[in-house]
Image 1 (spheres, rainbow, N blue to C red):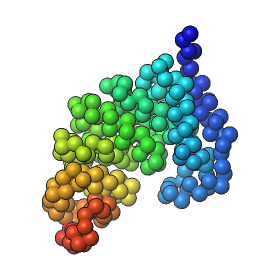
Image 2 (tube, helix red, strand yellow; image 1 turned 120 degrees about the horizontal axis):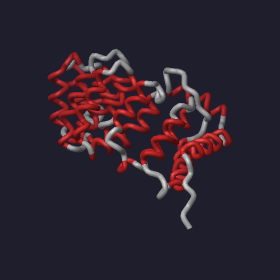
Image 3 (cartoon, rainbow, N blue to C red; image 1 turned 60 degrees about the vertical axis):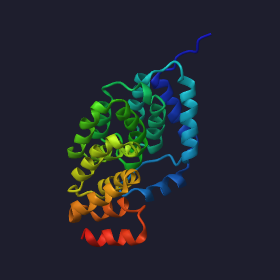
Length: 246
């Protein structure tokens, strides 16, 4: 007998009900220390969030396509709490091989509307789902790199972190270094950290290219970005690059 197909609205209600049932106000208050901006949380630990997302995905696996998962995110991203957004992203990421060509525009709309208004929510969705999409749709790389010039900080951060899992692949390095350079002038510590994280990952693929890039850009590289980017270099080389780029 075929399983009854659950609606995105029903799954969203169940997700929120389950999160509220295990909410921990003390943990929720503690979560704030990881964010400079004010966030709201139920106070649910990461393993429990992942377990809930896996369980809910199991209830729709085989009956949903990415369209329903995207509709679920429309609902859960509109919720204020971090955990609701995380559950939506984690379920959507399980449909990453089925994402439609319009997916980048959808992600950009979520971000520009501040529905993913913290680094954790952006970083849960974009490296995995957007990374998988770009791997399958390299024709969309230019569209996503252009996000670096968007006025919204979360769209800007996504322009970098969407390439994190692609940094090991040579064919994406030109785009990655282009995004990083485009973000250097932005006066935002969260953007500087994202650019540094991206460069560090690119450096794992080609340390020599990262070294050359940093020296070429010199003082234009924000110091936060630089420190993140060179974390995997030996101490002597880190010190040398910090001096040479002053």
